[in-house]
Image (cartoon, rainbow over all chains, first blue to last red; front, side, top):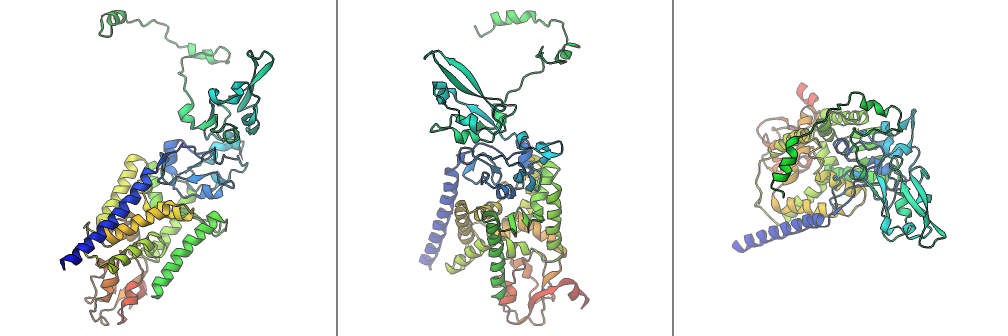
Length: 250
Length: 261
């Protein structure tokens, strides 16, 4: 009887070992993935709150761009949709089927509607960033692959012509991203000819800065209205200099 | 056997239709168990998931609300907890785990918890959804993860399946479906007044206890041999007891009809 019990316990332990090794496998294989959401996704927190993880957007996408995050895609929120532009970019469908299909409005059609019609160019999935050190255009080689691939050519992605002082007779064709227009579709990233793309789409909140309200743009009409009620008194802390000299930092 | 075969056919057909819809574009069922589209027109949503989303953000899309209402009405008025035994793919895995458990004659539970734990987990998931602003159970749901894995044909479904089968076979009897699953708790609560119930006729009962040997929610059978009554809503309507009973003491019935009798 004792031996039988021991064998049973052995079975249980082997089974538990199998279960835990599979748990370990799922988590140990986890790779961080960029949170690039489908077009018209709400702000990240709100999106996570709203998304029911049904995959109807994934199903609706005719190009298999979208994937649902699994355990191994860490940092995305299990079951929520994302895409990896270097694999398959967003092809910017005019009827935006992924957004139309979303039952919980986590992909909010309002964010991509202009004058009552869907406009995919309003999407803000991410923003492209150029690695100047590894972009062959910065070597002086003529490459405009990303520029040609951009669906908003000359708006989101521009070419800056610059004289190549080293050769004296050639021009640099430098890709410049305008983040006001860049939708983050990733067509530039997949078009990039380098081994690992020198132009990469990143989540907007990782890249886009924010300027304080205190700067006045003289060339923007009405911007000087900010000066109207500005407090012009100087606020000097006379003790600050003393503190600096006498503080511990020196 | 007929109910078990019917259940497996329904469970596999639903998964098959999801796979066909998502991979091959067959327009019958699309999406997954969280939210889906029937024939490309009727939206269906998991009401429990939607409840969590609502508590997390206090706003949900109108399409999903209608879909959830359809589902709630179905289970609340027709079949109690039938989701668990007729739809949920985890049921296939836990049944397999339970089968392995009986074959290996493993009696001892490593983890012993009350079957009420699922109600506490259910309450906890709602509280967490509200406090942390994210659908709490949905973000760790093994049901969702496994269904997605199967429906979108990804390899991670295999790992999840093995984990669940191992837990069920070696850790505790009916641990996941019968003790822990907050979705099961939700369906049990919803199903209180649903009409199709197992009816126990104690006049025919010979106290053979065969039904208790096969029932995955054994506490609902506490009336066996004592009183003629409908079985309560924790029953997952799997029909195993009906199959096991040789005395015609247990069968599906319609709640209202029986009451008038």
